[in-house]
Amino acid sequence: MDTVIEISNVWKIFGERPQDALRAIRDKGLSKAQVLAEYNAVVGVADVNLSVNRGEIFCIMGLSGSGKSTLVRHFNRLLEPTDGQILIEGTDVMGLGVKELQRFRNQKIGMVFQNFALMPHRSVLDNVAMPLEIRNISKNDRMRQAAAILDIVELGPGAQNTRMNCQAVCSSALALRARLRRILMCS
Ligand SMILES: Nc1ncnc2c1ncn2[C@@H]1O[C@H](COP(=O)(O)OP(=O)(O)O)[C@@H](O)[C@H]1O
Ligand SMILES: [Mg+2]
Figure 1: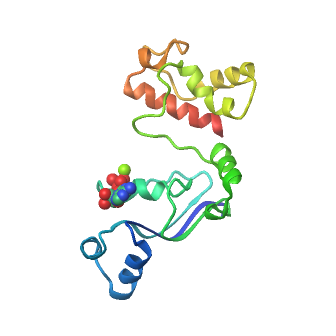
Figure 2: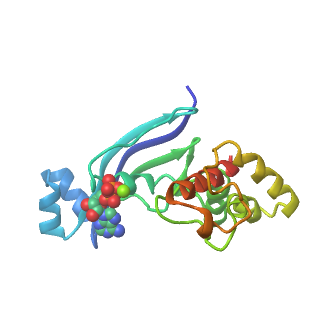
């Protein structure tokens, strides 16, 4: 089986003394409320294990505040775990140096944010082409590739003119599709 993402025993505790809080959880079995009361710390992710295989669509579901966003932010090291291991295609993301981490984020992983991250003054096409600009691909090549990607995630009415600026043409659903297209450009 080709495992792409492997998360082992990941903990994330927000606060001043996360290691002390984690030790107390392990030694004394403190609850989330007790950790907050005694250490003024928030348990964001508690001992998560998962693996995602190539081609698999993996959904993380849970109540608001249960730690979904916190967990996912570990995959590209936007957050660093208090404990545990994150392997992406066998690479330990915590072992990456600054340059390697930049390359990894640029080439290996994409993240679609719920509410932001489109450049409102740029066209839909230009937003989709942005990852290639960061990779120094020529303007002609990136516009050609971006135009091909636009067909994969269908355009809705009102945004056929992909050269108009995003703010003018994008409803929130259309903006989401534009973000999806931009991530597809990375693959
Ligand atoms: N930067 C932070 N500092 C302190 N607590 C945080 C921080 N980020 C998230 N949390 C807490 O971690 C828990 C999980 O939050 P989150 O991952 O945003 O949940 P979800 O995405 O499932 O709604 C919540 O209790 C939240 O308040
Ligand atoms: Mg969330």
